[in-house]
View 1 (cartoon, rainbow, N blue to C red):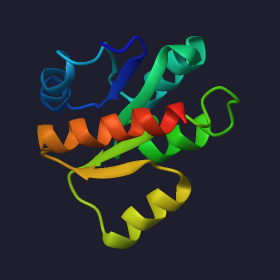
View 2: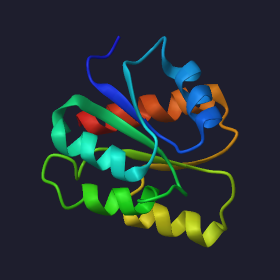
View 3: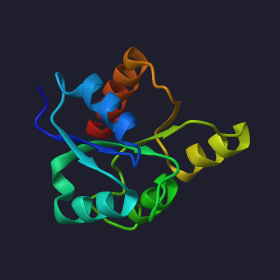
View 4: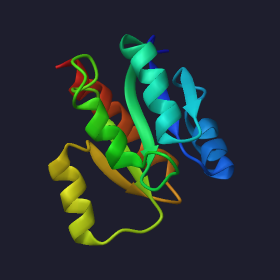
Length: 127
């Protein structure tokens, strides 16, 4: 098991539960119910996390706003953020990747795809 945690951020309790079930056997997990709570957790413990998986649309701070804040913090700016969405235009997806999102996955997320993308993100953050 990895020592660094995965931060799961989603305001939908069902989506959060699905993510937890996909990952809990392979990774230590911490959760946040919106981007603002995630930002507070990340600021308090920036070295604790390997990857952030966040919903695109949430109250207080949405996924891209969270990424923008992370990019201003020296310990968080290289932390991979995987963005989840129920719907998005292709242009929006491209803009998210250009903004620094590691990858962009559609809900409902396929568990095997999520695990592959997550492992790639972890390897990328180590290099």
